[in-house]
Each structure stands twice: as structure tokens, then as C-alpha cells.
Length: 186
Image 1: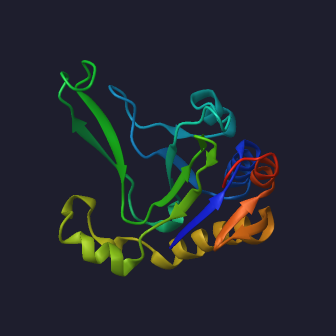
Image 2: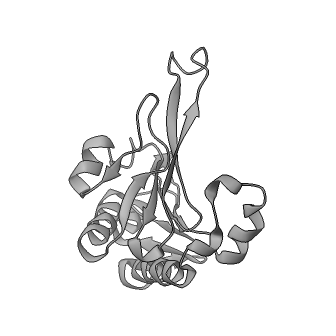
């Protein structure tokens, strides 16, 4: 499943608040900062203390979502870095697992609001890549129906409840529409 949507700062905060208050999803960084471990966020406040969610300053923020209902295991893999190319840093960590749901939040760049994104593998897609990437483990350890149900619920929430219009198949949340009305390109 892959779904793109347009979200301004206020929209992203509404979505994150929903995830923390209404679901059992846990939010992890896709990758850690240099020289650090992956962070798990327990509240919107923790996220906003680490990332400036203001649209004009927002660098792309990449999260992975996991629930115990998914049954598969979240993996944290240490990546060795060349300190000559990484400002003296020698490692960082990546978060992985076949059934994790991606939540990528994007901001404004050059007068355009880039679409944010949710998505995940299905069992067939994960099985296809499992031969190449054995480090992620057995795809059958994941509850693919729980993953699909959760991501479909998030898509429904964004597309049908929080979006005020669509552009193609992408929902446009209320804050993003206000930005568009003020001249921003979506």
C-alpha cells in the first residue's frame, strides 16, 4: 500500500496526535543521527522537540510505525561509516522490518509543499525481496492482515476524514489547502 497526501504543520500534528492517542502504534526514526541510536517517540512533544515541524523549515522527516499486533520484530542495525565522509562519525543505526509502516512527512521547498506519504510492503512484495535481504528475517512472522488493516485505517482517516479535497488520488488536508489558497503550489 502506498498513499500520498498533502499536510501542513497543523495537519501533521493532528495526525501524530491521533497516532499517539488513538492507536497502539509505536513511532521510530527510519535512521538515527550520526553517532546515535534510533529514537522511539512517545509523544508529539518529543517529536516537536527533535524536529522543527514548521513547513518552511521542515527537512524531510522519516518514521517507521510498528504495533505488537504486527507480530514481526523491529530490527535496529548498526551501520559503519567512513569518518572522512561523515564529519568524523563512525556509525549510525537503521530501523528495519518487513511489516513496518512508513510515515514520511515533508515540508515546503522552493514554493512547493511536497506530498507526505504512508506505505508498506505486502506479503508478496516482502517475499520477493526476502531472497535479496535475508537480514530482515522471515516474512511469514508478520501478521500481514493486521498491517494492512492498520494502514488502511490511517489512509481512510487522512483521505476521508481529515482531507478537504483531493489532487489526483492524494488527499489535501485543511492546513495544506490554506497554504495553497495563499499561493503555495501543491
